[in-house]
Length: 277
Image 1 (tube, rainbow, N blue to C red):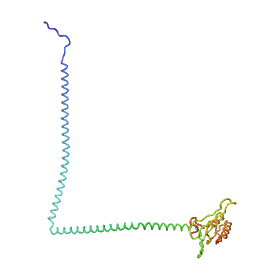
Image 2 (image 1 turned 180 degrees about the vertical axis):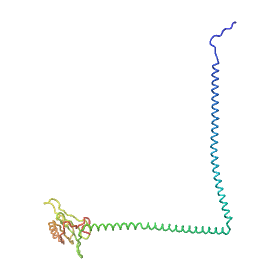
Image 3 (image 1 turned 45 degrees about the vertical axis):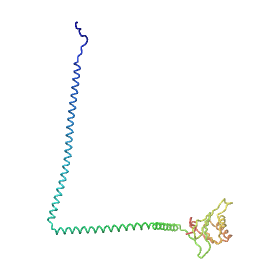
Image 4 (image 1 turned 30 degrees about the vertical axis):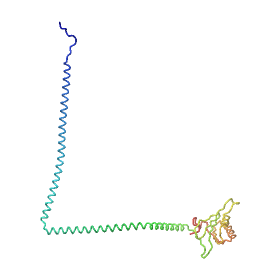
């Protein structure tokens, strides 16, 4: 039989082999680079740790050298003390020890004295606080008394500033005293000898059909038990008419009375205490 000739394209594997070779080369190069990086990092870490260890060792060495210097200084001082003790006689040592013991005893006595003084001071402080606590009520009473005295002084000063005339009943008179201040518009009445707010009488209603101040005073007198009373009538300028009316009312009631003249601006009655001082 005769061979048939092959027909169609021919398959070549050279391109695939080239790709495999290239990829293998690239992977090899990357592995080499990674290995080189790891080696460099290890070297850097080892160098850093060596440097840190060197710093720690140097610091520790400096501390040990400082300790050694202190120990050497203490040894020198100890040697010096030993030489001083060796150069000192036993008698001198006993004297020095005795002096030091005496100084210590003096300090102990001084400390005991100070402690005793402190206890005494604390006891006195407690007594002072107790006395202060006991004196608080007395201080409060004293403050109230001082306030009362100041109030009385202020009252006296006010009375002196008022320049008010004070009237009293004659000594031995048994009647109840009253003071009536009469002016053109009103009549003010207050008891003598005791503090009381004055009673004021004024005209009420219209002129022709109302009540005058004297009429209202008469109504008040009728309501009071004034059989043993004595009225001192003080008349200001313009109060003559009111005085005549009051005198008639008191005469009808058979009430004892007297009268006197005063100035228009003369102060007689206090607005709160009346005729009392």
